[in-house]
Image (cartoon, rainbow, N blue to C red; front, side):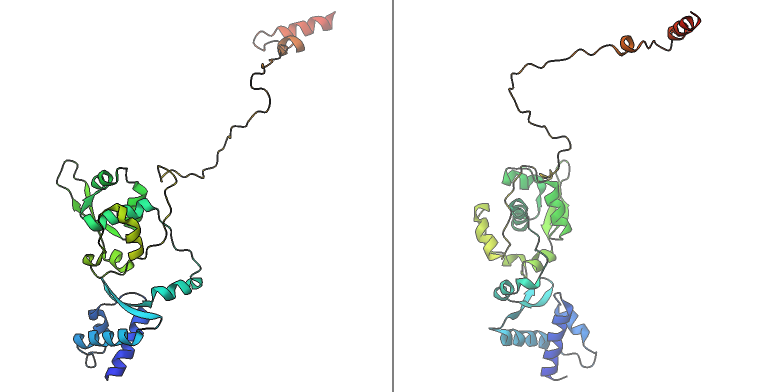
Length: 250
């Protein structure tokens, strides 16, 4: 294969994969005898990056390889193509994620000590399910709490090659700067102290407001005793049947 064919092949592979591909993965796609050297593959990718300069697409190197994607500016103009709304996360979740990224390995208790509030189990579960964080070990203290660290999926999602590429963060007050530099979506401020408790649960028995004077005296009517009013007598005594027989005979 000549240089042009190699370039077209790599470009097509990156488009077809829909995910990052490493140099080794790209190399394995070629036939054995026609496979270029790995250095030539990297050189070809650099050529593609130059050719894409000023267009709507680019090739980015992330933790797990190279990924072809639209530029951030073009993505904003093409948002109508994606009908599904992107997931929205709370500020508490991203603050927790930032602490794990910048201070890993870190335990849940250490995160709570820094933030000054408890970390919801829902936040930890979401981060684990998204494969942004993982359990990297246990702190050698009583209780052996789990220690969390970030994953390669975290780096890929935020367009980073390694943790050293994270923008500098002095403290959590730098949150807005971090959000802009990582191109994070707008966050939803926490509306409730405990995010695990849903706020839209319907009330089965709502308290109805009673109109009128609150001091109005409640009048209770005395209802007649049903036994006295109907002449019904307890079935255990059998007196009702005797009286009926007596009246019949009279």
